[in-house]
Image 1: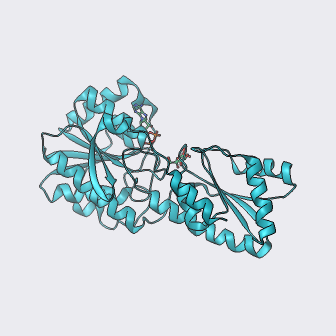
Image 2: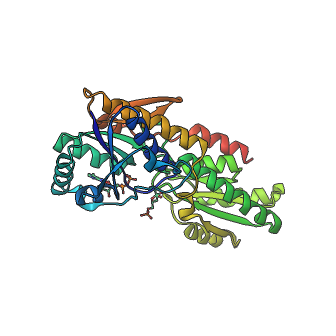
Image 3: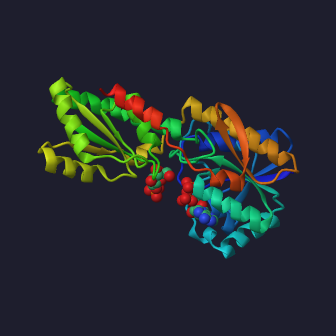
Length: 321
Ligand code: ADP
Ligand code: F6P
């Protein structure tokens, strides 16, 4: 394959630029022609395509967001939209496409591959870490470190005032951001959508913490459970205690990518390009398992259910004793 394109789709994630750079440079160094598509599938349908070379990705590795922009595109969830996308790629003579995005973007990629015969490679780009076939997705490590930084700062104030605080973090239906940041930040409680939780147990734990002499109480709450405001009201009803709340929001999606995300981006990009260079390959997604880069057939990858790490939660609970 000599002519390929790259796009970013769904929510932006730190490390997407490092992945775009990786695709452009790994392909250019093999003599392949690379095109960038702006605003995900929306730009594909509209033909917002331009030629990229090694210099067009200079000074991007450290930048958050995505230089290709991103979008959510409902039209691409229709047969008509997918066919339009395929026609645009054919008109440019583009044979392969690298999609950097999450679960939804990969579903779009599957339709494009099945209906239009375009070979696609997926690089997992989402802060949520909600894809079952890979241990980690691009952006997750940076997002967790951003949460951790915020948690440390919030802890200073909560400790100074002997207060409790609920920190609401992103992740959609996945509790990994809450689990990893809560464990690393020494949260007193971590609440995730994958595990049932009992509000009375949380209240009892808060009371025990006061008796034990803990002067601050941090509850990390995954957005997939409920809002921090709702939990605050329920705790107040039961205990009379007024808890502070912080919804971290979009700061989790931005910022310079961590070393782990940049290296993961480079390794995934290299594998995606290598597979496209080898014409015999069908559409696949790239990931990482036990620190080894893997590639998995698209439908198979989409059917793998994400496993929540209950052992880590057990450890986090013991550490908050
Ligand atoms: P993410 O890729 O981060 O999971 P979304 O779920 O918002 O983000 O999906 C990004 C885009 O992928 C959507 O706006 C749409 O264009 C496309 N997409 C999502 N689901 C499908 C689907 N089932 N079929 C085709 N395209 C889809
Ligand atoms: O998928 C990434 C994510 O940031 C989720 O954690 C969050 O639920 C969602 O996107 C927010 O999406 P939007 O960009 O539409 O606000």
